[in-house]
Length: 154
Image (cartoon, rainbow, N blue to C red; front, side, top):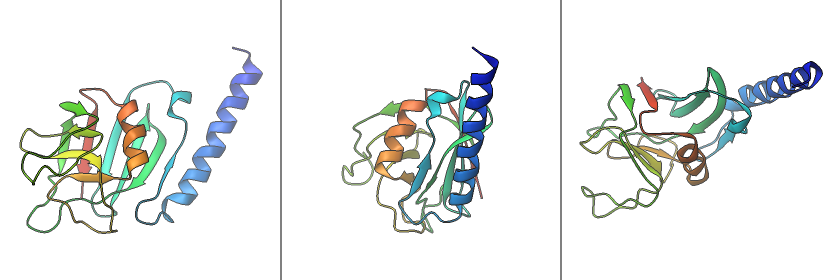
């Protein structure tokens, strides 16, 4: 690749990164920001911050996506720690909660914790799962593999 084109690509990504960083604090429930993750090579990782109810998607240490979330409500807390995606299913239904739809499900534990599309009221409201906006969940699903690291912090 021509050095000039490579510099232009880096500059473009840097501008997008700055734009995304400025928008992170202003996201309303159900909103997200997503850069074209295909423009960045490398491994995908996810950090979920329960205190600010946001998920951050990184590729090779570069922020490519951020989204509001809804985590577990009191009594159904979302566990913290480092997990790997164990299973993925585009169309999944809960076997614990009345066949509730869990589109773009990415399982983090075998006892029912997953990332998936769902309702985002702006506060913790799930039974422990990490709910994401539908479009963001679809994009994220396409970017991850079994074994992708997900770190959940408080």
